[in-house]
Length: 525
Image 1: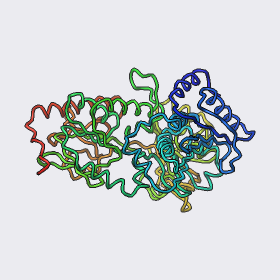
Image 2: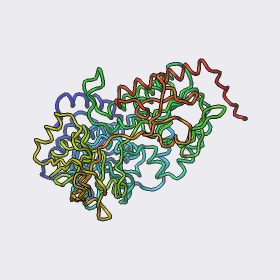
Image 3: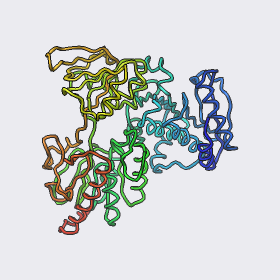
Image 4: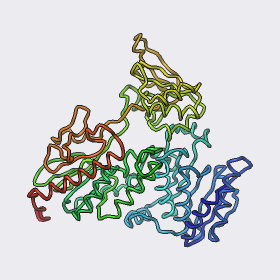
């Protein structure tokens, strides 16, 4: 099952096991079952601490592999073949079950251990999904730490009847004790906040006690990470606020224009960014959303949980997100047929009809990828012509199951109350309203900056909500700088965001050196 290179690498990892790991395989004579059995055999052959047995447990889906610790009673289950992006999830499950230290704050691990009751998580994924492994791994950490918690990774494309029965139309989709729990990216901290009522309150109280920062960066994508590193290297007190480390890059599949690295993937680059930032003295505050920015004796930001942080300078690196169509039905059916990541959710629509909204590079690339999975792809482009590169257009037009409709203005997403059944569009040439029956809609119409929360801050922005900056990254407010896709920079590229993040941090440091920034307020004040 595994090639020699992978076996060699895995053997090195398994040398870190401290206690026995038991693999229980539920399989039949199907191809996937035999592949899973072969995978389990390969793993057990690489370490004396790993044993394997076949299961007669009727509760396990077929095929499944349960990773268990006889010593702690922990159970992590993979239903399907955990390869592709989920192979890393399997390797980490083996290590954590086998006693290798978990790279997580001690406070969080103690919080997990102290959770009362039983938690049975089921996580539906597709093996091509970039976002899914982060969610699977977070839940697997919980299962490895607390024996009253289990997590089952379920390959949605392999258990299609189950997916249809539960109306799973986007991944990752998480169920807790049989009921829907979350959909899309979610961090370990956010999961804990949902299951532990006191978690958010404790977190807010801890944040309120923090001393003022010299530089506070908001956002941890390429621009924010770059700013944090450059700030910390100057030896000043640096903080980093983020809802999710990596931002939009975490959802990016292939990256082939990051100079000096011929090819990589979003999650790998994000992991490297975070590792690099953590090499420095940066106070990273995860799972936090900022709601306002105001001037005073010092710059102040307010978080969603009510905590207020102060800093002498701030770098805004909040990035951008997928633009929505803003038509009736879009938000109602988001995650129930309306999707924004064809690589993540495409496999759930195998053999079905879908639409792609947008005829730029991202839209046509999505159509080409989906055409290899689904029955029919209909591309709807508002303009009279496609905007994608010619090579992509030619490829799309050569595929028999891709239909391209230009001068098409999508006006409504149609559904049956549970899921998408089609869409309505207006032919901009004739003015006629037309309907298309389909199961999924993939929206690919560009980006919108994450700057709505700044509308009352006084920060100058363009009509599109992009932050206006000077060459050194400075905004119109003293001490406030900005970088990356949230600014008016014309090209939204990872390497450009990193450069602008460095520029903003250096600009902010220069400001600190040149200005008579007020002294930090005493705690008594």
